Image: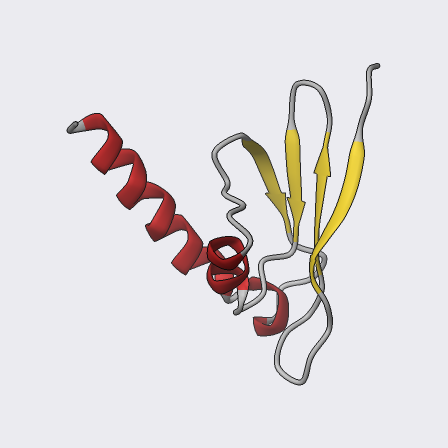
Length: 84
């Protein structure tokens, strides 16, 4: 196993929970996708391009509301890249 890193993408606030990104040589895993995930990835220029899997620590709006929006954004940019 080669180098790996773990980084926080968002912290706990009044309406969202934490999000962590774990990166390995061949894979990247995302833990939780709170509601502010699209804003965080846009502002910090972090995408889901190489993400292998998304894990939710519990089924609750605080940790899962960002998943639908981020999925739509990923599909949009993939479709846009395929058509250029």
